[in-house]
Amino acid sequence: MSHRYRAVSWNAHKRVYDLIAVSVTLVVMLVVAGGTLWRTPSVTAETMVLRSTAVAALLLLHVVLSIGPLCRLDRRLLPLLYNRRHLGVLMCLVATTHGVVAVVQFHAGGDANPLVSLLTTSTGWLTVDQFPFQIPGALALAILVGMGATSHDFWLRTLTAPVWKAFHMLVYVAYPAISVHVMFGALQSEVPAWLGFVQAAGIVWLAVLHTLAAGREAGTDRQSVSSWIDAGEAARIPNGRARIVCAAGERIAVFRSGNKVSAVSNVCQHQNGPLGEGKIVGGCIVCPWHGYEYAPDTGAAPPPFTEAVPTFRSEVRDGRVYIDPRPLPPGTHVPPATWPPS
Image 1 (cartoon, helix red, strand yellow):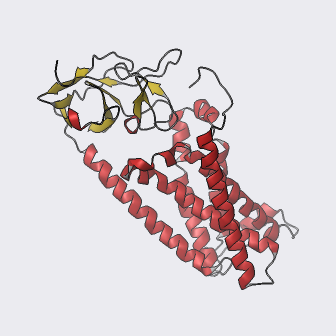
Image 2 (image 1 turned 90 degrees about the vertical axis):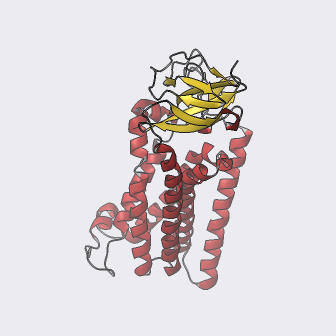
């Protein structure tokens, strides 16, 4: 962390992450382009670019949308979450390449402006063979470009976390638009028919993942808030880690450090990241998303930082941790409960 702006630097972990992402993407594109050329030797270079970028962007989008629920189901996958935005930007670049080539190839040769041509070429909204599938594709691309352009933390701070997060949730508008684009394009034979089946499989995959993850989260969210919350046995909270409980819809991260137990809000002030999925390093809770730090007993970031999260009173009774569900103001000091009781 730094108390003033500094350009983002690529450490060894980021370099490996990005190298693997770019390499796999290029391999996928080369395989699709090679397969297209093998099946149709007379195919144009533009068509190979269109098909290879379409498949690569589609696979990247499904990977990006899968990481969140997968990490909810298995914490060992959390390293994939740390640089998920890198995958999103890569997907945006590949999708933009696809969109630009498509507009140039199909709409730049006439008298009308290419964008006007894209929006007006077909008006058969109620027919399968004339459905203007390129329009939902253009809508999805506009959303993805907006997300990619605002992915840096400068925009997060400028727009504020709630606005930034709400805007980036538009990916769930872009995804059905892309699904319509791909499946109707496949039906109209503008793209390989098998790509439509791949998209259908992707829809089922994401639906199952999100349903399973939501089911696991719902079990925590149904906790009673009528009195102090039983957070379970202190011994079963991993040292330096947290157990997440819920009070009135707010998730609470209950951390254990040695024989001390503290409870803070699960919501990081940076990007609403899940603090309870992080760990205590050097005496501070470290958010797993972007490394923001908070003291377990105060919920406050170390100076000169000013971020703070609400804290909660905690007690250890007969080896079990109990949490008062009433949040205290952000930054309020709460003496840690000791385990085992002193």
